[in-house]
Image (cartoon, rainbow, N blue to C red):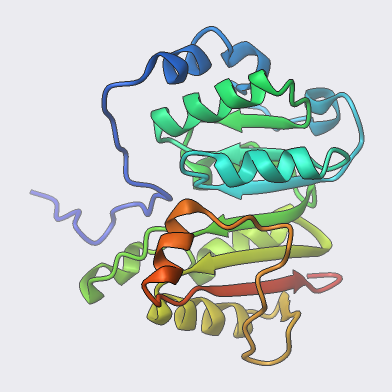
Length: 231
């Protein structure tokens, strides 16, 4: 019998399921054709998808989508692509975007790593966002964390020169690992200076989860890097 325990492919998510509300179901089904992207074998054409040539911000794991929706509203001349497998969050975001007639937002319900590998064109993303990823807090599970050198290698191919990477986490040891992994990668440079965390930019909304944490004295670390030219 083949031992496959050391060859498990890292995924960017933990699949969660549950009963959907009426609004979430509406977003996933009746409104999907307005905002959802069905992945095929070909690479995505963002100019065709958004009907413009504006830059594209990619967010992985947007949860319930509230902050991504707010950013899309506040930055109408920036396109936003969100990737999430949590069906309730996908349905909620699409439903809320439809209510507000948002035109610069699209959603993919697939594993982000596979989409990046197979469907996102090289040098097509201006900004990458990863807010509060699963910390896999047990030490033996750290290998499952998405921010690793192999992921940054992939991301560096998809980002435009001088493209931005913005990651936020409320787990200090994960923040330190993310910082070390980005700083040791030859294609990225810390915008705040060597081993410095950034202040939360105004464009990143505070989530309800983050507000609750702040009241309890929990820290949040924003890590912002740019891709070096020619990287």
